[in-house]
Length: 184
Image (cartoon, rainbow, N blue to C red):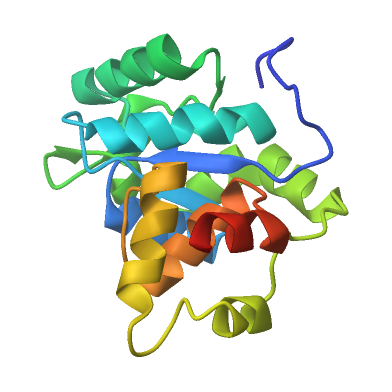
């Protein structure tokens, strides 16, 4: 773990990875908040969202140990500031001539993530919303897409499904009164 980067020790980390396979693996290992970039061609709204997220929680970059992974790290850090980085040995991330987090043995990835996941377990962070809030605010079900769109635009949430919008609001620690204000 890099020194002098952590700014929000009272909150869980936001893990940034490259793809949905990486996202699934990180979640299986106990990472609650995970955002895939979609690769080195990161959409602008993802970078804007990361910039907002970095104001409230520390970002951990879990990227492939290759050129595109280094490009993503450079781009994210240029846009949002210094992040924590999980360094992976390239030789442990190669399988069937492919390089990446998705190619690592789960045990090796678990070991690399251990200090971060332990931090997340030890943090007593109260989530800003619960599932009932999301239903009461009309953010799921008929007519909810238009309501979610207001939140997506306000908070630069890069995805529009109900679950991803809820995750985005939790990552940003947005509280119910703030959501009600945006929706009114």
